[in-house]
Length: 187
Image (cartoon, rainbow, N blue to C red; front, side, top):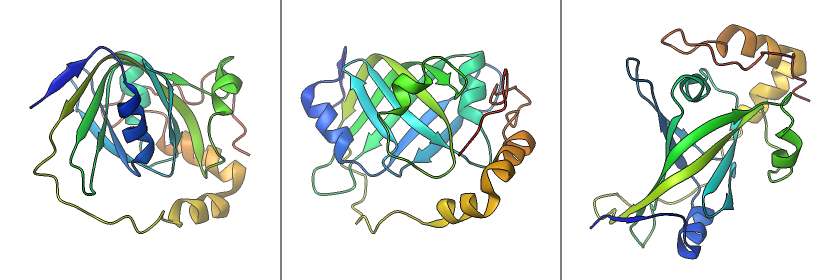
């Protein structure tokens, strides 16, 4: 049975820390909804009402566009091992870019990861847990090396060129703001 909480509790924080994958969902009132899987030890619980993740380069930048235009964000963690549980955090999200004053204060929470693009911060309105009884069990085999090799091949200049070509607008044509105000140095 689903239960709601006003904030993350210690057991929720421990559950999040143990998961190898999480999902983000965002959208706008009249555009496509986006649901994205994330991994690579890129999420951090900053407080009982704030979670952030180091967003890595991908083929799109939907979450950034949606947050800029709507602000709603849901993050979900799901157990794939012995103890079934689904945890969702609902709230308002925002993007912190390299050129933003808050970048340095947030960036130190994360390990160095390939293709880091921006930080997404979720200010939590509510937390929901549900059983997860129908979620299958899987074994974690390790992280993929593909992104690291791709980023190394691109190099810092190639990465910014890729952002310019592929990450400036959403599939619905909404601007992401990734390269606004300054050209970031991805090195």
